[in-house]
Length: 96
Image (cartoon, rainbow, N blue to C red; front, side, top):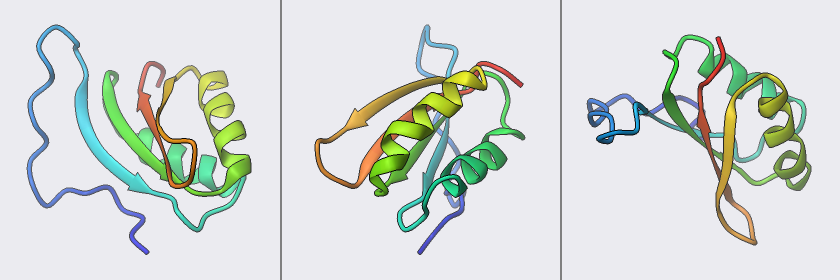
């Protein structure tokens, strides 16, 4: 299971007008709450404001808890895929 942010290729430039830079994807499949939040937070902390990190999860409680916890921390979160696991969350770092 891969749990690191993909860094083998350079990140694409920010999308025009968005101010957001793609920081890659963090595969959290197989992780359970609260570890999904802990690992997501550790991945987001070193990123600059405006960075976008996609989280891949498959633990149903994480689909409820992770977006809420990240939003409480001040990040922007959007569920971008699916009714069935794995789910993808798009997180834009808005708070340090």
